Structure formats: structure tokens, C-alpha cells
Amino acid sequence: MRTQDKIDRIKKLKREKNAIILAHYYQIPEIQDIADFIGDSLNLAEKAKNIESELILFCGVHFMGETAKILNPKTKVIIPDMDAGCSLADSCPKEDFQKFKEQNPDHIVISYINCSANIKTLSDIICTSGNALQIVNSLPKEQKIIFAPDRNLGGYINRITGRNMLLWQGTCEVHELLTAEYVLKQKKKNSDYLLIAHPECNDAVLQIADFVGSTSAMINYVKTHSSTKFLVATESGIVHQLKKDNPYKDFIIVTQDESCACNDCRFMKLNTIDKVLESLEEEKYEIILDEDLMESAKKPIVKMLDLSKKLGII
Ligand code: 13P
Ligand code: SF4
Image 1: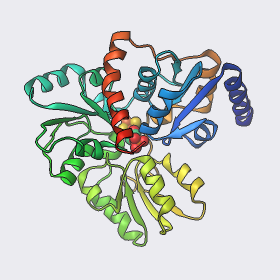
Image 2: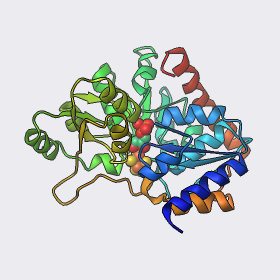
Image 3: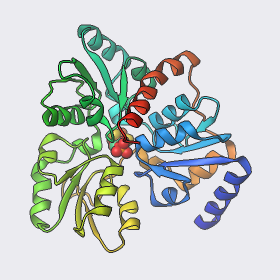
């Protein structure tokens, strides 16, 4: 079957099954283009909560599908590939984190949404890169906080706010590989370009960025900025939306070294048009979670959404 025929079949199945496709900005362009809604983790969580449909096909990674299921437990949530995990979520196993938490009983736990449902049950508030700074700022200065699992996002917030949150030492394998040395080299070579970076990058990279923000925040920054040239320090999937919104602006994806031309997340890129079609046809792979686990994991996510509304972020 030709790609266009597969896409037509996906659209037909979507109508027949009353299904909604949600996609993250790191998905391949073809998937972004067939999605009913595209966004960053915060936008997608908020959207998933309010969907009144029989079926959600979530094109992103596993923790995103899990979050959608937790927020909308009556709806069947499927993902195209069960192996689409996340190195950051994997860097925080439940037993180890539980011990860490027990060693610091006077701290509350703020967890980045890139974590398993199990870690969410051990958390007081969830955050995303789109609201982490405001959520931390909304708490009293003297509040002791454990921030997990991303040490880069946590470290960035510590630096900006002057706090001293205890950081779980997890990282995203895609962003962690970008070194300030090589990023600087790319910046010098393209001196008229502004550098925009995701806060999962390490601090040395963030310190030389002109703008730091979530995928949605980067997209909005570029849309409203008068500059026409941008170096982009995050996963390469974002360039599709950037180009769509700004056909006359120029984007260079920042890479780890000369050996690679792109910056792909091997988990996000497991999803393909073939798998999306198969997933819709067979209604697989379904996210199934224990009821009690969902109930407990839901509380800190809802807290995040309520706080984000109150703070005017969503
Ligand atoms: P955003 O919340 O900015 O979309 O980021 C999600 C993610 O996985 C980044 O690596
Ligand atoms: Fe996880 Fe990094 Fe991939 Fe985002 S880019 S899904 S944080 S491995």
C-alpha cells in the first residue's frame, strides 16, 4: 500500500471508531500531520483529560499514554509501539526512588511528567518543562523539595530560583549528549542564529542559550520573534512544526558531533505510519493499569493541572 493510501485508511478508521489521535512534536512529520491534536506534554495531558471519545491513539512515548489513561480512565488508550519508552523515565526505578524519598522525609516530591506511573504515586506534584519553574516558584522558599527524575531540568530551576532542591540524577539520553563545547562551535559557525534549547539539556548548554523552554514554548518563541534564524537544541521532530509555522525562517538542529546530522529520540521514532495503521485496525497496544495505581498516580497530575490553571499557564 502507498503511504497516502495508508493515511487515507487511518483517517477512515478514525471516523468509524470515533478515535482521536494525539501526537507529540517529536513524532515523524507524517504522524504529526494526521493527528487531531499536537502539543507538548502539558498540552497533551490537558487535552487527554477532556476527550470524550471511545478511543485515544497516543503517538508519543509510553509515559504519555499512561498519563492519558490515568486522566481519562474510561477511554481506551492505545499506543503504536509498547517499546516506545523513555530513558529519563527508566533512570528512576521505583524501589531506589522510594529509598531516596525515605532518606529525606522532610522533603516534598516534585516529579517531571517523564516518569512511570509508579513514580507518580510517590510524588506530591507533577510538572512538565512547560510549568516546572512556575510550580516550584508557587511554593514557599523554605519548602524542602526532591526533584525527580531529570537533574538537568531540576538544576536549571535551582540556578534560576536560587533554591537547593535535591536532585534525582536522571537524564534524557538525547539532550544529555549535546555538549556545550560542540554547541558553541555550531553557534560560532552560525553567529547570526539564536540558540533555543530544551531544559533537558545540560547546564553548560542552557547557559549559552538565548531561550530555554518546553517544545511548545520554543515554538511560540520562534513564531513571535523577529529573528529569522535559529539553532535548535532538542529532538529533531520539532523542526516540522517550526517550518510549518514559519516557512521563511531557517532552522538548524544542534547535533552532538560531526558524525550525525540529526538528533532523534530512538523511542519517539519507533512510531511509524504502518504501526499507527495497525494500532488503529487492531486497537492495540492498549495501556492497562491497576485501578488503585491510577487513582494514586492521578492526584499529583491533577494537582499540576489545577495549579497550571490557577497560574494562567493553561
Ligand atoms: P515537552 O514537555 O517540552 O514536550 O518535552 C517532552 C520530552 O520528552 C522532552 O524530551
Ligand atoms: Fe525521553 Fe528524551 Fe525521548 Fe523525551 S527525548 S521521550 S526525555 S528519551
